Image (cartoon, rainbow, N blue to C red; front, side, top):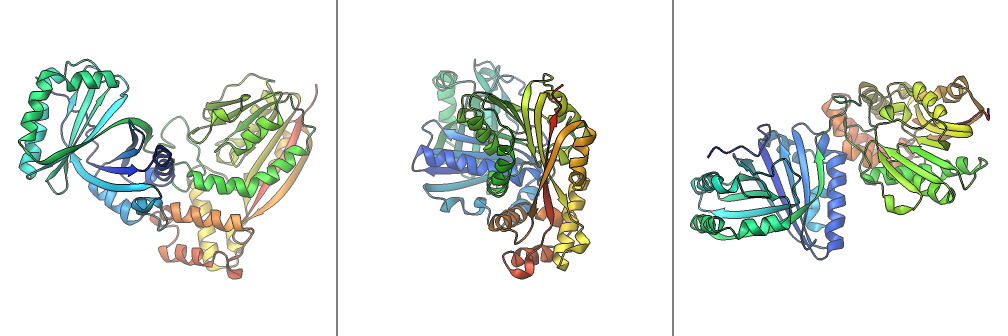
Length: 484
């Protein structure tokens, strides 16, 4: 029987992490933490291919699988991870009872008759053998058993991995659901095969039956339909939840103040473009309690539709968004349009989506000239950041003309508000800047825009009078579609 490799040939190395915890709430928190870190900076690293986060059926154990093009890419990422990244201290996270890791090279596997269906059940099967020869023999047993497995209903695939030390082995089989798994395990040929496997093992196998909690693929910004930037230092990645929450802490009060100054009607139909983690969409849902809120973002990972009955979440690229003309009374967007290829065109589209008399509120950053920063480190780092964002499609000076752009687009009652941003402007600024650079600043170093020493010097100055600077202005502008 010819077997089909279940593993993409581009995958040259995989790392499994198993975290056994004290309660389902702990495991679910760890899944969120791992997903935020992987999306935030790991997914943008060279050689990253994909990550899967699993929860055991009793929801107390987390198993992650991260795939790399080559082992060297994993090693480089581990060595250059941010000093405060939780990935460095998984064993020390509250509620973690044990933490084990496995790294190895994938071997040819099997595909079953359900290979084109989504897997509902996966098994992390860690085995100990006498050496690499026995590990290779295990992989051969898997392939030799392909005759009946290839035809077994509900069987998706199985991929074996041989560990770095040669004496550990992981099999990663998948089924469409638990009933398929149980039928598979009860099959007479499977029981006979397990006896053959047991003769090669030096210790009982360790098995964790799981469901898939998160799937994270390599960053693809610029290579697909969306060619604009994402606002992250690492091309294509989404800022981690911790960054977004600090951003909300800094800027939500100002946004609420502006929105509250409008003649707000609780029956308004509202739209937020680039909703992030949803804090403003949730606020709008409460304010427009007789109306509705549509929250749109290219990544809806952090958005919770259960926050309000009048809230709808839609995953979409703003530049591809198709909405009914005249269907909203308020459109709000913050730190989003500056990352589009044509933000002026986005203003015109937003005007069409507004009903006559509706309001558009836009907030975006204007970065002050880097050469005027008070410190050499600040000048270098700010110039590096702006150059990097320009290279991935963001225009960090567009917002300066935002009020005028609203007027040109036909909005009336145009107004604006300025909020300073930069080191020392507020505790939230310092914490946000420090967190972001510790998580993603290495990309500036990797691209030759700043040196590692300059990055360290800048971080050391945060919170000191010498490090204080006004690097950007958040320009919030608003206008009304004429009540024609």
